[in-house]
Image (cartoon, rainbow, N blue to C red; front, top):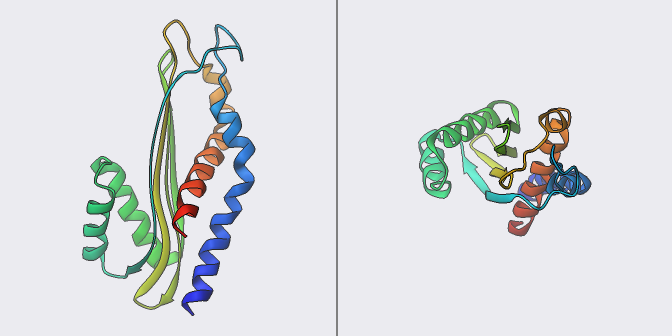
Length: 170
């Protein structure tokens, strides 16, 4: 049964490979001042993923999240805990947020939980937090309409980043 659930989780993760073009698009730049010829912005990505078995015990899950995802703030860890609990009840979930500051940064955050039950007390799962920040160079700014109209592509790009990281752990 464990092999079957591993294949189920793997096949779900493999679906994200189709988002590679959105990932490439997301890495490109579109500046209100310079259009697509804008120099590269400062970027910062922070990705943590894990491919694991989880016991259906929230105290154990809480300790695991605190230890493994210790470099993330408490708000993100709380969202991850909530998604893990949801996994125990109804299957995998995700939480996505995108923020934009005019003349500042674009931040995309994906919290993803993919898993399935092995038995009533154990789940096979891939968990991860992906946070990607793009900060425009001085005298440059990202076009808010461009990013707002393409939120689904940003989500896809973050899921591709999740895929690239978690696939190394399988």
